[in-house]
Length: 387
Image (cartoon, rainbow, N blue to C red; front, side, top):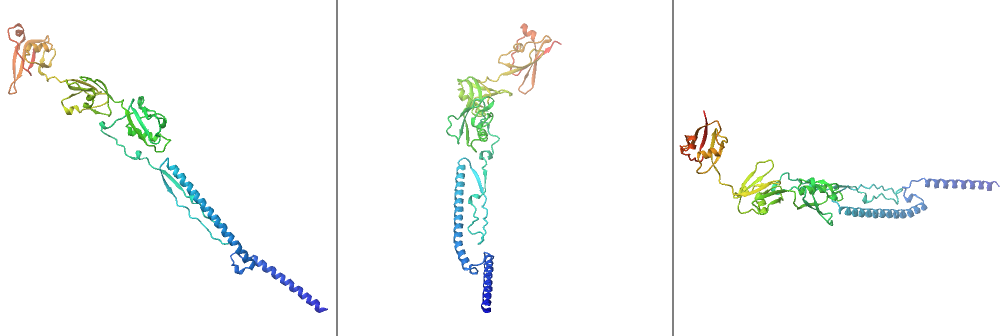
């Protein structure tokens, strides 16, 4: 009896120890790190790893493919947007290099995931190109015959390259040099400006286009005028197409008559300018707006003179003509004063340059006792006092 009972007890103890060893083995296998190779694992674990890894690689490939497609779509959208924007403005584009992608390869925890970033994440900095019309230096001084500054009444032809379908491009400069151009907003003052300066100003005021191309010309000139009268076939107001024009160009418009010989230009604040038409250099004298031009005949032959002084009512230089006598000269000078005496001295320059003086008695001349002497050009007459 003791032998079977002892044998049963030993068998039970053996079974208990075998079960405990199996439980510890399973627990140890579950606590091992995932980086162990399949050869250290049990057959079932190795088989499970071989099944999971192909599925994880498939998921990673799908994610990467989706990311690449997204990047290509974003890049195409960026290109289309950029092309559309270039239709309305010229820009300088600086694209920052894409950030480096940070990918970690962890065989245990990153299976089936990707850190690929879309290519459309690049940074853009758009800078407008400077306006060449503003950057170019504008001449500060030009010849008056090559410059025209608009004024009231001038009709401007304003062409806008970005808006070619506009019905009318003609605009009149109003009083005080004001221009009303709808695309420029409020009225602007253009009086005294050249067409190039007006083009630049309108380019700055027009906001519906970026860097608009504006061309301004004068269609009808009206603000610069001069008046011409006298010996011309077409007198009246004439138009200047520059700040100054040669006199002969203006006379050509007025059709000068053959008998014309000289022109007098009257200008505010200056002495009159007398021009002989036969003098070609003088005929090129510049005429400016506001001048009054009078065309007359040939100038008279220069007058010869005699000179009178002393007790005379109108002393000074007097015109001389051949055959002029002493009493005629005194009467032409207003006669003698009440304080005048009967004696008159006449001095005449000789061939040697010296003056020779002769004395006459007016009372004897007037009574016929003495002949009335004939004067010569340049004679000097002095009426003495009664003392």
